[in-house]
Image 1 (cartoon, one colour):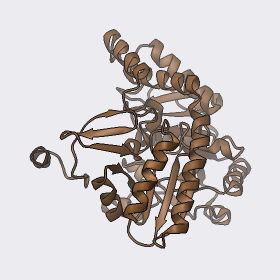
Image 2 (cartoon, one colour; image 1 turned 90 degrees about the horizontal axis):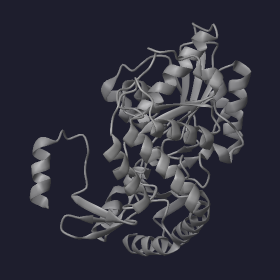
Image 3 (tube, one colour; image 1 turned 60 degrees about the vertical axis):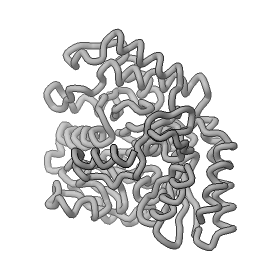
Image 4 (cartoon, helix red, strand yellow; image 1 turned 180 degrees about the vertical axis):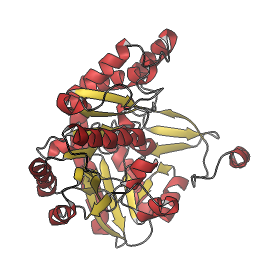
Length: 391
C-alpha cells in the first residue's frame, strides 16, 4: 500500500495532505484499505455518503442508468433529470432547480442568479454581497471570494470585489455590512469547515427579515448541512424560514459528483438561455443518483432516523466532554457534530485512524463527526469507545 501511495504522489498535484491510507472498498458504514484493514467511517466522504457504502437499491439504479446512457447533453431533456429536479424542488420547498456538478458550482450559480435578479429588478448598481466570518463556500474564485476564512483566500488575492464579512450569529454585524448596494446575504445554517457552529434561531430569522426589508436575496448554503444531515431535509427548515436561493451538493447524490441550486419561479426568470450553463450538470447518471437517493430517504425514513440517532450521538459526546479535560465542548445538530478540544485536533484524528476509526477535523481544534446517515447507536458506541481511548 505504501508503494502505491508513493507512486500516487509522483503523479498527483500535492493539493491535499492525504491520510497514509489507500482505500479499496466499502460495506455499510465501514471502509477497507488495500491491505484489508477495516475502518469505521465517521467522515462519510466529507458528509457525502449519506447511505453508506454498497446500498443495493442505489447501486442497481445506477447500473441500470449506465446501461441506458450516462450523458446526452443539456440540449435535450431526460426523464432522470426531470425526476431529480422535481424531487429537489419538493424537498427544499422551491419551484425551480439548476443541476450542477459540485457544491462550488452550485454556489457560483447562486451568486450569478442573485446578481442577475437584482439587475432584472432595476438595481444595476447593486454589486455587494455579505457573507460570514469562518464561512466556507468553495474553491472557485467566486465561491472563494465569499469564503470567510482568510487562509483560503489570501494565496489567490485579489478576490472578486464587493464582499464584506459579518460575524456569525451577530445580527447587528450583518446590519452594519448591508448597504444600498447589497444584492445578497449568503449564510450556512450550520457552519461546517468553520468549526460546526449552528446558527441561532434569532440570527437566521433576523437575516430573513433584513433581506425582506432591503429587497435583497437570502442564499442558504446547504451543501454540507443539507440533505437530512441535521435531522431535517435542509438545516434552514429548523428555523422557520425560507431562503430565496438554496445551494446543495454532497449528500444529494450519495457519492456521485452532483450539485444544484433551487429558487422560486419568480427569481428563476432572471436567468435566460446563455446566462449560465454546464456541460455535465444534470446528466442522466448524476440525476439518477439524486432520484434514487431521494427515494431511499423516503422509503427508509432516513431524516427521522438521523434526528433520533443524532440525539444519541450528542449525548455520548457530552459524556466525553464531562470525562476528558482536553474536551472543551460539543455542538451541532443531528449527525453533524463537533467536539472542540483545548489543542489541535489533527494528532487525535491520526490516532483514531490507527485504531480503525475515520474522523475529520474542522478548523484547527475541532473533531468533526459527519458519518453516513444510516449509522446506528451501536456504531456511535463503537466510535466513542475509540474516542475515549485516544483522548
